[in-house]
Image (cartoon, rainbow, N blue to C red):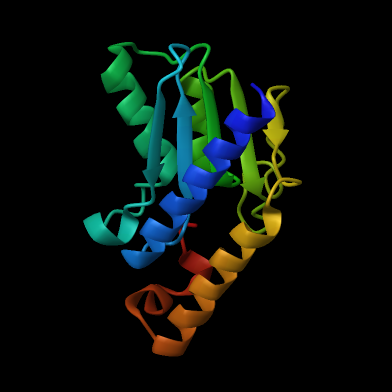
Length: 161
Ligand SMILES: [Zn+2]
């Protein structure tokens, strides 16, 4: 993948994160790059659907299964703006994703940072445009705390990204 294509993906991921925040979702997004070159962009839908399992990467995988009509996504690459949780990491492994890139670490519940589930094909993207992604996440949580929105009532310790 060349630098321009990667930058384009990151820019689209950022737009998806902003769309998520507008919908009161935690601003996390994913891009599934299929071997055909097709890209699927998603963001969290936990709040909207009242379902804490609807993380961006799961929605991207599900869309990938539908699009390819396949049970596995071998040769596909997944980009996620926040390190996957344990459940999503398992799903990514099960789907046979070839490469996983993630933007920010999740020290509290990330499958890699916290649970130390390391595999060879995990790559970090943290050096590219890190500042604007982390400022989007932190300003989202700041505004939620200020307004006492439903998200905060759930309790930050229970949050699903
Ligand atoms: Zn997850």
